Length: 453
Image 1: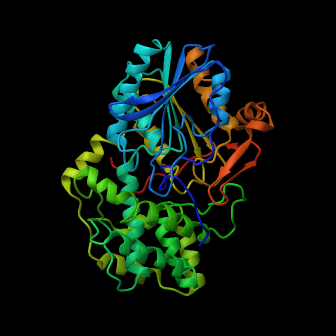
Image 2: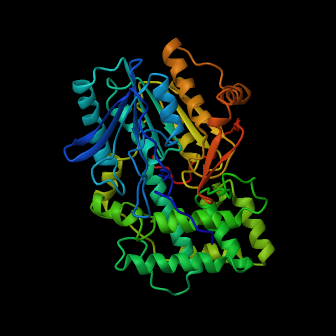
Image 3: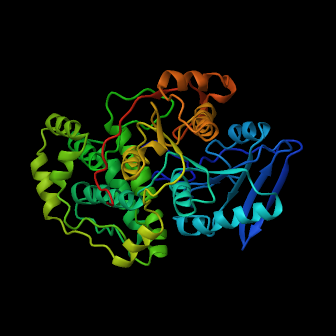
């Protein structure tokens, strides 16, 4: 199992890379509001537009050295400040974990502070990455008169679905790969021991063909693609990369000791369930079902027997108050009244692209959204040029009242025009940047397998 060093996991991520000082002549503000840290940067040539950035889910595995202002920590903020955009972000009360509830309050408090201490923006755009992309959408849905547009990157708009999927994956690992080990998937009595047992089961499964087939099954039940390395080509054999996503994002990040422990504390119980879930039927709806069947045939293993074992295994029920908490503090409604652009890696295994299709289908006005996809693995693995091109798509809509063409050729040409300095992409595997060409593509995500609505 390759080593991963990240700030956050399970589709809710921020990259821990060095910071730089504020640009000369910019007014920098840093302090606290109600005990919560914030950062504001205002260039001397402020054009009246404010970008309010919401960060992803931070865990104890690491966090950025400064308050983030964009998905790319350095180059995007530097470009935006040089070109007249003001930037602001709160770190949210609690900082670590599932901080959606405080984020919805703390970001509005920061907007109020900005209005009193800097000035009223001509327009305000909610931006965010991973969990923060979902927060950006929620902010605009619930405060339609405070925002003029949304840029959601690698986002989770249906976190209840995400945590249910995480439970499904862990349930397969426990039932088919962990033998008779005593493992609590929710409300764990010993979170460390349960997480370690699940991790060991995933590592052990990679040692033989039957274990690999079961990894493919677990991944397929969440539509988890097998492309982990953002700098590498799409692998011909995806199972090893699916194992990486399962180990790091869904066991380490969302497992009994990771984000789930914090989520259950905030929600007042367990919001996830698999009562009534037919895993045979779920596999039949997965766009990865054929890969699973091939893996089982190659291993000479019995897929029907494994599905029958899953059907007989004891199920997990949710705590109703925790489910209600998720709907209040996470699940987007689709009642969006401003233009929105989304940006997603087509093969993201941490925040699957299904989330984009789910949210677009929720909107009562489909003409309000444009969804852009990059042909790359990894999570939130965009260059500054790609991020800025997505933002420019939104700004053009706000400036002209109509959408410009978003075909891949036009988008890639626009991104390439930023020059080589802005083409670096961060990779979770190597913890490094690499210059890569723009990679916008036409893409239609699969449908969500466990949607909240």
